[in-house]
Length: 148
Image (cartoon, rainbow, N blue to C red; front, side):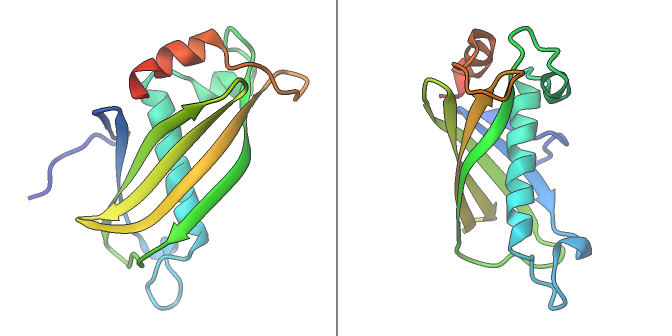
């Protein structure tokens, strides 16, 4: 029997782990996960990681966070190594790898049991209300401090 993980995943040893199941809607006509859906799985991993550390993306989107910031994806890289198929149980592993002055880099790995299916790396910039880059807010750094 698989270990139970909450619907938002868990943070363990500085890494967020999100369990997901592959549904029919995730696959192509052959029952194989469509390549763009790996990006969706990674987005869910990043979003749930932020949720678990107390960063409210709804408030960010509406500029209701104290420092009035939001994220903007600057770069995304994905290496597809193996295919996931209908009904697979996968996990999305997200780890912060680097903070810049106005951006953060996150490394992500999608696994099925011991197999690495895909590896990704994203760089997200922080923007202010005028959609201009700004330094990473102190509150953001404080909440993510334990994940580096």
